[in-house]
Length: 439
Image (cartoon, rainbow, N blue to C red; front, side):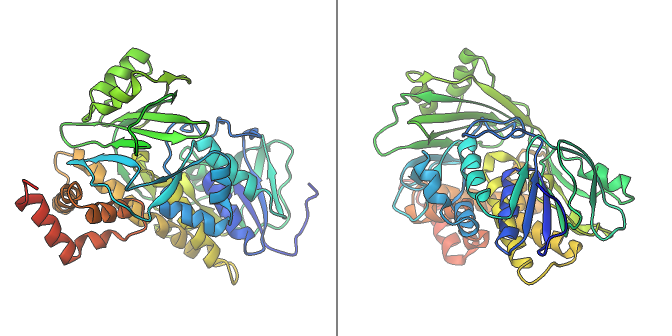
């Protein structure tokens, strides 16, 4: 690509992650020129890649996330479905077992699509890169970004055939949880940000099955943890090519194995025996892949006293969740929408822009970190009260389809969390959970 000054703002995005692609599309929608750098050779099909080490595992694209991506990239939902994604309904098609049993099923508008992470990423990448003025440089490893006092950052060392454009309005770090962003900050004379941290001690193991015989009317199964006695969970969900992706997970070092016999033994130890029952007669068609994520981190770049000009941090480089709650892609999409709105009429200063983007992660981080605190000996009074209220609604949701729909709507982020605290909801939940035991 011939480099030089552009008549429109130029953004240089480090990382062709989902967060990087969505940020690219957000700015492109406002007329920006986009240059994306990624260290991988990106596959031409829906295949795993090195830069997404968790790509073999279940990724749930929540309804709110699907809506947000569709807003940024019109046609994405249809394209994902046509590529093999499976349309499902959260309250009808899922056997959903939470802390206190299976949620009551009933009709709802909580329709979404299940697919493998490689298919989600490939579909999004194909649509985003089809736009004019979006250029991607593969096999390009950014080793340092100079965040000095100049007007905008400059990339000083890369591997690959790339020359930094002469005019860059914004550099976005979207290269994941193992980003070197903090090192770039310290070498440029900035402090590193404070951190909010939880340590769920999560490990998971996944593989793909064919011929999995679920009951009629059931397309997927979810069984969640229950503190303190059940630190194991599982998800079975349909993906492309008439197969099912199965992910077993455990907290607090209760890691599922990659040996087939031990994998099945782990499945038999779950709260519901049905996971093992469904798997034992199906055909495993992929290796069992493992992944560990012991720590979740929200890096508070938005609270730094001094922040570099022309720099922004997004995606897992900013906030890396406990992935069992499926919020990462949705949070990245919501952040991209905020980015698009904030840059519609110009370029805010970087500190303000970082605060705007970080605000998209506040609610999902609070939801996930509050759940992670269930495993602490002393989670604190606020967390204990939150757990009690959530458990009350979860109990009621096993008996009332309307409350189950609201509960899942909050998890899919289409309903605000505080709706669970509305007086009429709480009164009905308490009645069902504690006074109608025989119902």
